[in-house]
Amino acid sequence: MSENIVILMLGVSTFLGALGLIALLWGVKTGQFDDQSKFIDAARYDNEEDLRDAVMMDEKKKARQKKKAEEAEKKKNYMPAD
Image (cartoon, rainbow, N blue to C red; front, side, top):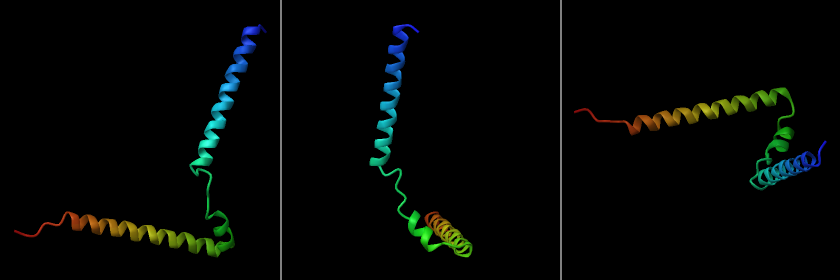
């Protein structure tokens, strides 16, 4: 290989490596890799029944939030009869 191609390959690989390092540092700094409840949930829900209960509770919570949002939308669009 010619010397110019080797220099170009070194430059491109150094640039890509630096870009990857910057992306990793940005992700760590902004908390992209933080999962604070992972280990707590693993200890709390350590069998299938507890996991099913947790999923069911989460679905109920989402349903309540959806219902609350729909009620707020109805109140927002409320117009008294003429």
